[in-house]
Image (tube, rainbow, N blue to C red):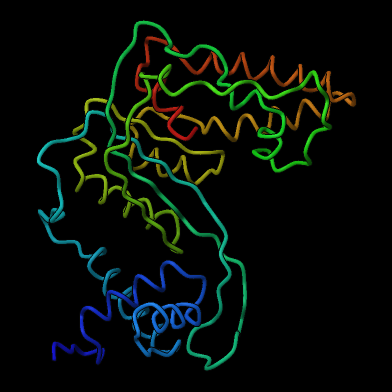
Length: 285
């Protein structure tokens, strides 16, 4: 029958894992499995199998065998290797307490994204001006997680930059994501192991992107010191926008102040002496 120790076929296990990953709860995954695949699987079974899979995958991830390489390790290093990390929040509960929610709490997640990208160099900054997306008051307010600005005619959104006008942008070839509830020391080692398996440390151009969280830069210092450190452009813009609103009560004056500061920042981020940085700092736009 092809059954394994989970009393489910490998095909059903894959379906359960996919449904659990794409829905917001074990109960919803159970409904999807029944309605779409015709599989009668209880939500408790979904939870049990997902926990088993996660435990097995974590054990494989954490194996430290000398000379170990990833089975999907590429034949050649990337032109441009970009490593990003950030923290998030997730609701958790104590395990092994039976039905119901016990010991509910918010915990920080550690998240990383490793990007294999194309790369070009330029004698001058390929986009010295602030992108149109960051000249749109409503969009900037959303980025800063602040109230929408008043609808003033003179503050109409700028026309978006046509894609054809930006051939300099690096193209993402492969993306690998990591997430964990572990501490930053352990997570940094996981990031380094994943980057090594994908030959990131052999790349000619390397960039490390993070926001202002201290542990981001502890990981950079300990594991990715040779990568060019880049502060997340989005976070800086949010602070500039908030600062402009704090300094000026009139929104029109505050917006002009923001545009001036953001324009100066965009110009400072480029530079022919650091071509990888001038490209990579825009990868999240």
